[in-house]
Length: 347
Image (tube, rainbow, N blue to C red; front, side):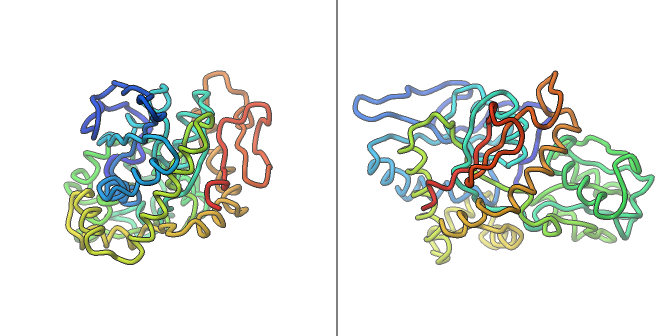
């Protein structure tokens, strides 16, 4: 999904920041208004942030709430999350699984203020040599280990009566996975767009499983430090959904800016949108966050994360970290809530 999206393993170098250098934290207050920072990284569902900034929509809502919002773009997804987790960033775009296994697992109390989208085919298991998931038994499957790709493989195996013990998982970087698939006569990989769109058209390549078969489980979001001012949270939500309204109308100028930010043509970006389930209104987002499906998804995610050792060292169970939902229910430890789904900013 994206470009550098679901990496949980190696921490890459920070690069291509919009407004500051790697590792630096700009002054958190101006002479008149409190200042906050939103970080994001390249991916289909987050590219609208480029237009939100370029158009002045974000500044308009920040001014309305009497605050300043700085934006930093990281080409390295994991580095943006690490900067958020270390305290240098106030809000960041990331997946639901990464929110649990990085900031929440590090003790950072965070709130999901909105879902940008969910992967609806952006992530896929692509094979040359197998015609079904069951035919992967005994084979080697390449993916970014401990990532959402790994999670999706586990779900695909589960749905087909297999487990990870039935095959060999080979850890591969997202930078190499496409070329390795191309070079081999027989190969099986789990990856995301735009890599999926590139390799699926190769001779004998076919998609065995994709994220549309687990709809709503790979959720892309914006989270904010829970302790951050509600004005900051509301300004981001309001700016995002004003941007979504423009995008939903297929405004030509807006779509060109978004596609350019994504690094391709408008046709390329529209192709990626076909497998990205965007939430274009607050009402849609609110309904999704308040659904029982999100609770079920987080149960899958926390079970996978704990089983793979992505919880803090010494954790005794997946219940050690609490996850709260809009109806007040909690998965895990109610005395240690570190991840919160909040729809107050979607009203």
